[in-house]
Length: 253
Image (cartoon, rainbow, N blue to C red):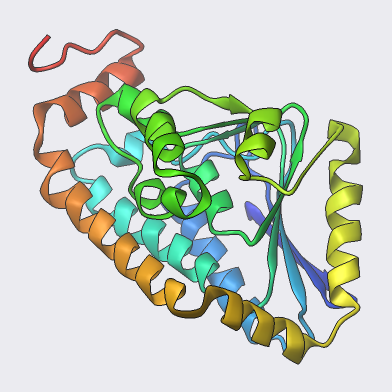
């Protein structure tokens, strides 16, 4: 059964994650996601893409069990490749976000051009609670926020509300939960009135040299995760403790 749905009409593509109940991102789902993105990028009539998720929550992040030794070595490169593919996508990308948007789910949103959030959203990077780091967020979050705000989100691990995200400039618009799909589609339709060539040129100009720098930072963040983070006792301890539903015992507790 597929976890990703792709539809396209009137120049607007919809990429829907449907993996209930929390839309967890597994390696299999990431592979499916990249395949849809690769095909969609070649559609000449495509003008805008809406990233969305079925159910109550956008995504609670990547599968924690796939972060353990023997699995993270494949997961992290594949996850960062998916983020890089989204970040470099040639037409505008709108993220329509509801419920929990945590960890890898939040990192997906950071690769979008415009974010529309439901008023029930909780955005967060809780990786520090598990003794690890969010590689894509470390690379991309400073482009969206002040250095201080980015650091507070990553070091603290606590979620923020939709209104917090609006105040910080992370999102374009906050709407009632029941209005999210309509609002995102209406915004996409307004963009899709315009020339595909002009939209693609505008995106290329907006990203400019920053795109190459963002891709470089994603690669560096992945290398740091592999060479530094996952070599520590605390990384494995935090992940194992989370799966066992117990408190972690840090190396210098």
